[in-house]
Length: 216
Image (cartoon, rainbow, N blue to C red; front, top):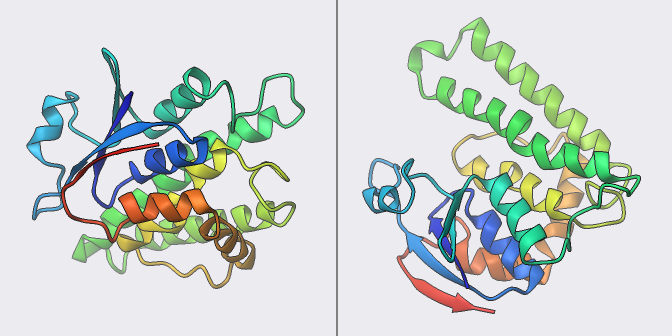
């Protein structure tokens, strides 16, 4: 059975959601953040970097959201929620799988760091980053106008990767989704999914108490 080491208010909610979408049995071990917001030292005993998400599958310990999602989908779900290489939509699926962290989250993290530096508030650097973020969100919004999910009619693991920047990340970095109606409609569809509802009840940003669960 896979163990998901979940850090509260973090990307590891993706992994709980993925497991619920796939209907796979798993064990969840919750690690509350320290007062500073950092991950607790106990997570360093699981993985050398001590960051979330982390899973354990037998003797394997694996970190990184994208790596974990791909591993679970291919190793434990027979490719469900993935797009096979021969499929015409494979490139689009792969793009959004990597865009989530490689482009969108990396830019948001820069914006977050600058927001926490008082001296950076009115700098051209911060203005440039925020402008880039607005343009990136507009791009995502346009792309979502073509279909209900990031890969058209098919809900995939790319959606699992892409949602976090629009939800829990906004607990850290305030920005307005109102100018992006396709993202707003997309999030309504996401929030209506039974697996997402269950995952957020177990590991969403409002769940902060330490707990251990086994679920199927």
